[in-house]
Length: 80
Length: 423
Image (cartoon, rainbow over all chains, first blue to last red; front, side):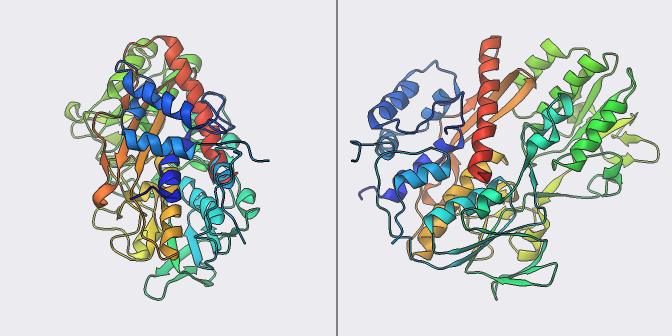
């Protein structure tokens, strides 16, 4: 079944627990974009000796989960 | 016509503005009446997201207090120069979104007639009720520890006057006098919280009452982030903190306010400052609504956090039985947002959907250093469970830069979570 807007929003809700324009110590995900999101999560997940919070979290997300997150953060082409 | 676009969602959630509008109109038309009781991290967050998802709905938030006093970071009020006012948040941000905020005590719920009764005897009708009532203490679970005793031996496990009382007692302590803390068995609000508090009180003693010592009497033998806390305590507080577990006679069974003492099986401890963190249960309104079970906590289904005991009533946060998700502000905030999405779908005739959930909790070991625990969870197949291979705690033996980085992340988290909930 094709992913819905609800699917994309739901999985991104956890990100917003830490990431915001107010989060000086964590990257603001506003306009982060699909490719950087996919690459960052894949990198965190593949670094088996990584110990940051993001390493520990990324290990819980499947390829399909990461694609959903990337789709959520796809800012696309700027609108006129 | 209302359009819920990605920009709105991101801004609502604290993820900021984005450039691409994503039309999302399925939820826009319902005029459902949604009542939320409890304006903490769960209640305020669910109200905020529902106001965006269901702009035509009538959303009412009821809390007994006009100001919310946050528990996360309140241990720093006890042990450092942080002020209680840094913990306080109002509801003007929610009101600006069209949410009706009532400062009132909800005294009863009729799940059949779908009404909430307030202390004023006013009643509110609802289509969906969301309870985020936090915790109440199990008075007398420790013999002699009741509401009156808490005025002498503060719990400070709801931030506010109790926090100030405990801090004032620490300030009045003579150098050399002991401090006692009692910690209950699980489940309780904020599993690593007592040990962060122990760290902050030990820091206070080390810097201001260096001949004094904190003795922690614990009703269990292991606890959240235990090895990391003990590593920090050995480094920073070898002379200012002693922890005794259950098998070392750590379980406090009785308090004596007249004698200024607490009792374990074999010993009586006397101290001028005694912090009792008592056993807990879901906030009282959960009992009135019939959503708590014999454990004192509230069973829920994990897709929209609807009570398994009372259809039409959702329960969030510390009050729920949501293990392996901990009773944390992060969990309450995320459960609230998942619930908002689920309720928006339910009132629009759609089923709630499964997703991936997460939690992160930071704890300070010194004012400049913190440690963390994270978890990732699935709610597929109506079962909330940890995703194996994910989550875990900060590395042992890490250098100060890593601990300082997590302290900075903790401060950022607090800004994000409070802005996300209260605006």
